Length: 239
Image (cartoon, rainbow, N blue to C red):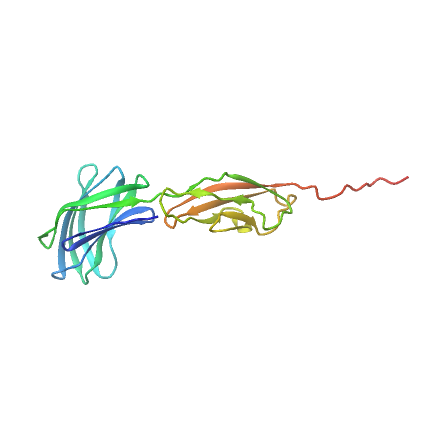
């Protein structure tokens, strides 16, 4: 589950989200007084929860950003000064990207000072609940007797997620994944063709559990057990 937050200041909005495993604070505005605007602010954040990595322009085509951003001290505070050529309102100006250092934890931040076109901004606080990746709890091995029915489950994936109200989806990857099916809802793995010990003695694959944003995987080996398929044939003569 991903939960974000939006905090408003005069003329500016901050929205938090998760993109490709990173915390992203998107800065946008709803009013411009001219084609060229200036935005300045100081962002304070919890550096024990999120590590600042970079910034990038929020969109494409509607504006250009000539900016200067710096980290004050070793961590925990960013200053942003930008001259913006803008052609529309309600557009992300810049996205600040942070690497989450913890999961299932609130990443807190606030704007302590700033201005848009010399209009002073008030203090704003926000927080973002960093989601947790699923944890696969099933073991890494399994066994299937050769010639078993194709409906036989050769491996059952189980996983948990610390985030509330999360629906997990399951998938496969790896060497033998093309020989297998997995139920995306239950995590049950079955064979596409019946197992034959004499032809293939094991199946190697990865099971993947995803909550829609984050995922985890586990390497699995399912061994094929030999079945006594044939009666002995007596080859000696009868006299």
